[in-house]
Amino acid sequence: MEEAGDVADPLIVLVHGAMDRSAGMLRLSRRLDDCYRVARYDRRGYGRSTPHAGPFEMADQVADLVGVIGDRRAVIVGHSYGGNIALATAEQYPSLVAGVAIYETPLSWEPWWPGTTAGAVAIKEAGRPEEAAEAFMRRIIGVARWEALPERTRAIRRAEGVALVNELADLREHQPWHADRIEVPVVVGCGTRGAAHHRQGMEQVAGTIVGAEFIVLEGCGHSAPHTDAAVFCSQIVSPLLERVGSPWSR
Image (cartoon, rainbow, N blue to C red; front, top):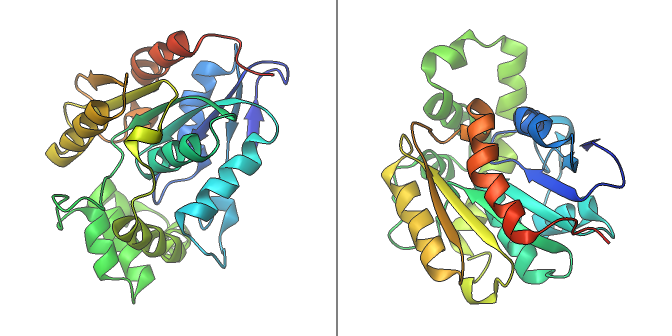
């Protein structure tokens, strides 16, 4: 886990998505750590937590996040799969969560969710997690970028396939949170360059969580927290912080 900013400042926790790691949220962290205590961590099975024996179910992901928060109170920003962890934690531990922002978070348990996404393809490769991880990365970053990576890096990413297929299979089978039980301020985002199913999903979330705010980032894709950190911070995180009010730490 990495933390930046003054220890006395209000806490923000950044939760990365599938086949990512805490380093992917570094640019966003740097936009916030002048005024806030910002925590990033490698979720189980990714980055420095690899290898991990599991399990990779949502209950375990929530427990990990609660461990990062400790006895503090936090605003949580979840990218992609990380958004489900953020909302599940807000539902189960409302005293620890002051507000949540999510961005293009998959609703893969929904019957309408496409079976052709990178995540769905990875689940079909569940018996071959290394191949699933490679196929996922090729879809997400492109074939050319994948093949340009050093072999050692590709081997590390393939090893993360165990976490990938298990967490995504669990997500498809078990709804991790319930909109009517989320009582904290929520900001929901997607990008105009994102996939149509992500926009549909985020519109659904914003329409079912009472008081949730829906924001579309013009010209941004699924990786906006990484590639467009300034825009993401100003249009997604800042509106949430205004709604939550500062300071929120105890």
